[in-house]
Amino acid sequence: PMIVEVCTRIVEERGLDNQGIYRVPGNTGALKELQDEINKDEKGLCLCSEKWQDVNLVSSLLKLFFRKLPDSLITDELYESVISAMRTERSERRMLKLKKLLHDLPDHNFNTFRFLMKHLSLVSRHEEMNKMDAHNLAIMFGPTLIRPQDNNISVMARNMAEQCRVVEMIVTHVCLH
Image (tube, rainbow, N blue to C red):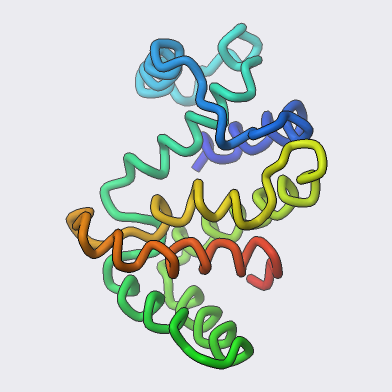
């Protein structure tokens, strides 16, 4: 989606060295204004406005976009299989299972997930400055990108470690071709 491309580009151009880039939230009121602006006219966005200069606001917008999706990027159909794959004992088998499952995603989901993981991998390579290593990024994105149907809180809590490990493993290895 265009909003994912715009937000990641801004973070990559201006925010890779911002400490806590995906942890520090943007102003809630300004975030609502940005979201309303996008909802009105996504194609006519004025990226030169002051709101788009606030990297924490833009990074918050990206997280909000994924949180607001009706179905998570890792679809409901694959949720249980992905969680199960992460519980595989041997790491090489775990990675193979995960890669196969991710390739079973609808093309749009897979391409968006791959795009985001490459971006997060780049962010993690600047961890010395931004303090956002693969583990921290996984905590920020795992439960949003890989969530159970109906956002069942008890299921999410039970599987949170696996949700985060998927993102951490992919960000660390960026193995989606």
